[in-house]
Image (cartoon, rainbow over all chains, first blue to last red; front, side):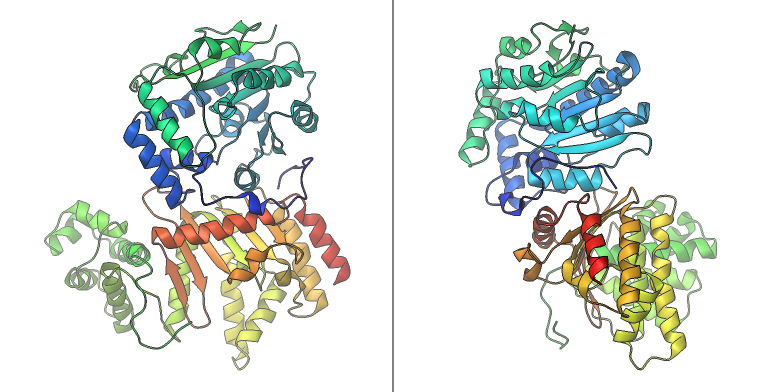
Length: 271
Length: 293
């Protein structure tokens, strides 16, 4: 049903699903109202939201931001190629669905190295007949592998929209996160776009919730300063309205506004 | 599985019988041309109560069900008996469906209703090729195996029913079907080698459908595959309807919809899906088995 290939395929990934600690993608799925989560994730998710109730607003706002960004890419920037790093478990309105509903010929490559996420993505994220949806099983640190694999489906001489939606906080060290972004963007041509959303460190309650989350044994998630977040876009032309709260990035007219959340988003164009 | 009369574990909730009974009541009401208001009046309730009942959102008073069936002109004792049983189950948390013999067919037909209502069907098959993917010859071989003394026309009807089920795959809004097949299900030559080769080719064809994903767990992988039997997880589009685990038995079927049970089966299914060959690797593996069959 899909074109799919990856450098690491053939490895038995089953043992890599650890159900004894909360799992980021499954908790996110829980916050978004999905059913692909276990008791341990629901407990961790509830514990998180007890400390920081805004997390569900963040989950929903991130999803809405993703939708508006992808529609901007297809409708206004004319992009037809997407490299989505950090796929997550399938939910409503995934990148390829948004892109292909506007431009059916869109080609989307999802990058993740979580076996559970990859298995779901391969089975459930199915492409439009006109376009393609593919999956790269790789670590985002490994820009060379990601780009080489992505090149099987994307024409890397043409603009690509590179997205990191709520994933860079998984990289504990900020400089390392910067180099991941720079490494992948470096392999894309002029006229390509970068979009990121992520949490910033302006909410003590969120910081506390993340500390408790980390103590549960889950993979840590780190916020950045607003300046660090903006720094991801150094050297790019920021698309209006620039680096803003995700809810303020080209909101749909008349759409209801959620509560303020420490979540920034932006889109930049590679000159 | 136990077939004696000891009280069975409180292992599944009332959701499935509610859905099934509600669906039946809806069909009977529509067939009788009776409005929700009129039906509500009959049982001293509102139109929205009727709607909630028909959507399987609430329990059922047996008296209400009996009154509605009277109103809808349902007099057949067997039908009424089956529905009253469902009404009791719809109120009693924890039930195993333990229908025997002739009524089993009705029950399986209801499963087909659930299957048709599902938005995602995840199946693990240890021994047989999944019913949604069977060729007629394979379905016949498997049916004969389980009904050695059945007359020919009964075999035909059973095979016909199985094939009719597959209309789902070509319908206007097919569910996403994600099946994990153990290699054993592909190696056991039901109906002989020619039938099996035809069946394996069918699997390759079906796997090309956009909404179908097939993954094989080779013998060389999958300790988890040995840990349990075949099962199916049905997911419905409505966020409020929980996933349902369906486990077919020799003379009945088991439905689980309590969260801890569903969690456990989803976890096993996820392990299987990650251990199996990827959807892209699977056709090649199927081709190799065809050569060896």
